[in-house]
Each structure stands twice: as C-alpha cells, then as structure tokens.
Length: 186
Image (spheres, rainbow, N blue to C red):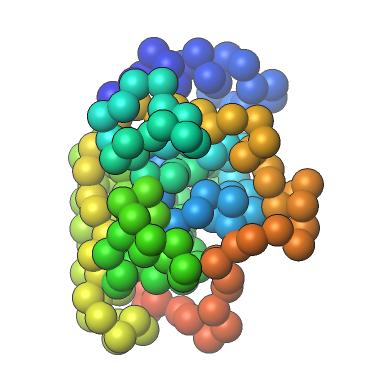
C-alpha cells in the first residue's frame, strides 16, 4: 500500500481531521462517481485517479490496466465504509465485467481496493448481500483487491462535473434501491 504517498496527500489537504479513513473504489468513468459520492454526508474529500494496474505514474493517455478510480477520505464518526459501499453499488452496475454504460474496457471495471482486513471483510459481506438481494439481474463481478498505488488524474479530470454540469456521466441514483441491512453490517 502506498501509505507514504497517502500521508503526503493528506498533508496537502487543508482541514482534514486526523481521524479520517480512506476508501478507493472503481465503477466506470470516474467523473460521475466523484460527482455523486462527494455529496454524501461524512465525505471529507475526493479525488479521481488510476489504481489497480501496473503502470507507474499513470495518466489518462497511459494508464495500462489501471481502473479509473476515486479516492474518498471520509469521517468514520459521520459515515462508515458499509454505507459508502451500499451507495457505490446503487450508482453503478456491478454485474457487467469491464463495462459501465457505453464505456468498455478494463479501465471501466468495478473494483473495491481495500485498505485493511476490516474493509475487505465489510466488502465481502456487502457483495454477498447485494447478490442475495436480487436488486441486480446478475451476480456481482466487482474485483476485490488490496489497494496499491493511486495515481492522481490530471487537473482537468478533477471535479469535472462540477465545472461541466452537463458533461458525460453514466452514474445515477436508482430510486427505491435499498439494500437490506444486517445487524452486523458496518
């Protein structure tokens, strides 16, 4: 895990509480993911980039097998990883391998890059609950891998839909999509 890089990133962000947590998710084009997730209660900051591949210093033009991903810094006193994952599974289709909407290819795969064993366990439980719920017509194909390097995307990709509100997105909130809660979820 790139803890040193993450610590340097947190040092650059003003007013980020020391007791935050990090999540890295991929669910298709990062523009729409960032636009919806940044508005959730408890989300302190987001940035888009590339993760899950092998190309160092990944860029939009050269990111190899990396997925377009979003790094989320959140306040665990206000939200939890399970809540983020439930929203993540609502706003993208986790049953289509290497595809979201019209976007196709490994860059657009669904993935959860967990930071520790607790996040891995919560992700496994949530995936199981999504599969059991019948809310999606197929089985979840979301990749579950430990987080590696996160390469921040170029400035023109950060906060894209805030700057271009009519820009492209394939993500949306699905009304009535509610995952049943478990007593042990969290």
